[in-house]
Length: 324
Image 1: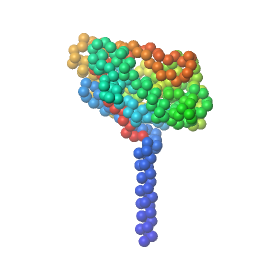
Image 2: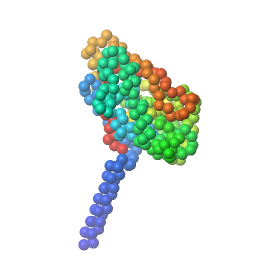
Image 3: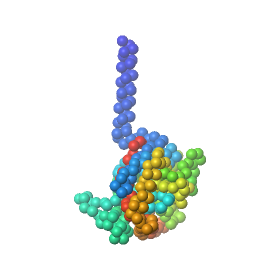
Image 4: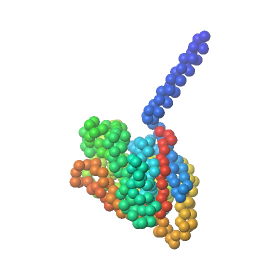
């Protein structure tokens, strides 16, 4: 009788523990692992390529948390690779693919039409996601890690205009050339199939405060802590965007899928009988970093830059978190 009672008691405790853990996960997955995982589905020429990535929260906690928050909000779904750095890297996370308004009406002419009509700069302006990013941040769905001064700093706190008005809508740069961000053991290198958080360095020497952990508030340059939503997939063994200046926070689990995607792009270029690969590209000059984080003239907003876009769009169909 006693044994039976004891077994029943233990079973109840285990069941309760399971329910509590499941409840925590369903309430926003507060249980954080050292190595979350995401699945990025890329569509090219009508075919889907599903790439799985292992993320390194143990070394790049702020970058990984930010990326997961954006992915969970669906921010990256139906976006494009807007800067195709041939034999180097792909940059995405900033522009929608054929975006629509709340009533389902097209925001502009289609990607394909804009490419043919040499109006990709207009297309990008019409499909820019900077305002959407800012709305996510100011609505309290993104965690702050960069502050304009030491007042109201809160580690791992969602943005709140009243409680932490000094928080900025950017992410701290977790890379070695940013002060205080040296990773002594196991830092990821910028290699084939790695994920990197991308940013356009602001031309300013203004300082901010970053929160690498709950015990540290470090003063650092704003230009190195100005990442927002952009990310990069490295498509070669070497890159001009080194891990010393760009947070390399994830690694592909099976590079064969990326190989297949790159082969499909090469086959497409050959099948279309383009005289050279330049027929597959076009350049568009646009203005980035238009959303202000500081109410000051010391920060250079509205940076002009040039993107390389592909004739057949490379579409980020979905970024899905498969393990938190």
